[in-house]
Image (cartoon, rainbow, N blue to C red; front, side):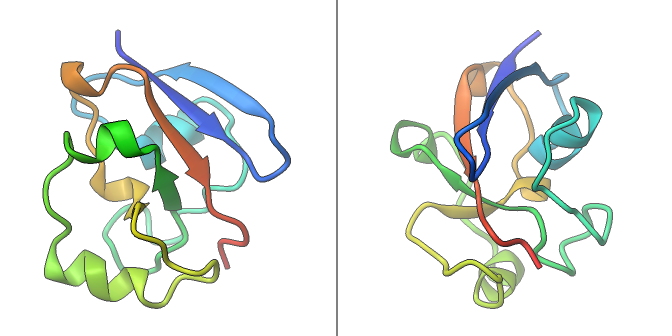
Length: 107
């Protein structure tokens, strides 16, 4: 099973198995990663699953949708070039080892 690495704002790293087809937001919740709130449950209406994706993985992700881009404009932590909503990152074999910094604060 592919793995994701979550780095929380305090530097704690969690390496977690995330099932194929599962969002990184759901993977964080399933593996006890603090900091990714996901208030809306992953329907892209709250922006409380904001993460910063390590640059080497950005090219493997789809282009940010217009709706996601709008949500990223309203995140509590300032948006960056590598900002993404973790509810919109779906685990694939290619993303094995994907590393994300959990944005702080989320809400």
